[in-house]
Structure formats: C-alpha cells, structure tokens
Figure 1 (cartoon, rainbow, N blue to C red):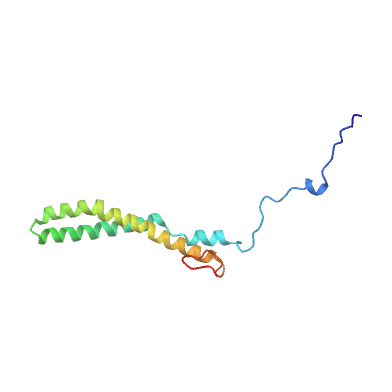
Figure 2 (cartoon, rainbow, N blue to C red):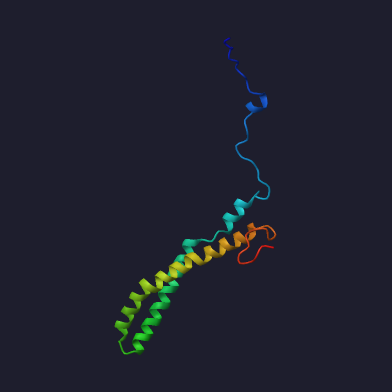
Length: 124
C-alpha cells in the first residue's frame, strides 16, 4: 500500500517571471518634480547663520555701547553672542523652516480631494 510520490510541475503561468517594478497610477514623474522642488537646506541654513550672526552682533554691540561698556568690549560681546546665539538660532531656523514648508506643501498635494487625514475635525 505504498503510494508513489508524484512530482507536480507548476502551471506555465506560475513559471513566468513577474515584473520587478510595477507602475502605480498617479505617481508617474512625481519623483523628478519633487527632487527639483526640494529646498537646498544647507544653503538656507548658512544664510540663516550669517543673518543671525550679523543681527545679534549689531544689536549687542549697539546696546553695549549705549550702555557705557565701550566699543571694543561691546563688539567682543556682540561677536561672542552672535557666534553662539544668533548664528545657532539662524542656522536652525534657516535649515528647518524651508524644509518644513516643503514637507507641508508635499503633504497637501498628496491628499486627494480631502480624503486624507482630518486634523481637528470630526468625521461625519
């Protein structure tokens, strides 16, 4: 009563290779346009650093000079605060604000006719 083992060959449709990539409707060409619209975060961060440095240095130097500290000491204090405070804050804001705006715009484009997430609204 021993049964012989049968080797089942798969159907020809199973042997056909499946395509490695499949096209999803609505995304054709989206990669190239999103790359081109991506903000240059490094450039905007460095511009933010320079603006923050100059603004903090000028404000502290003027305030120190008017406060009677002397121009040399005020300039030194202004440069110190400009390097660490103004430059750091400017670098942070210059790098994150354009990127956040880009991601918000990208998120708004990805929701199709209000069928995305609803933030703060009751679903009816």
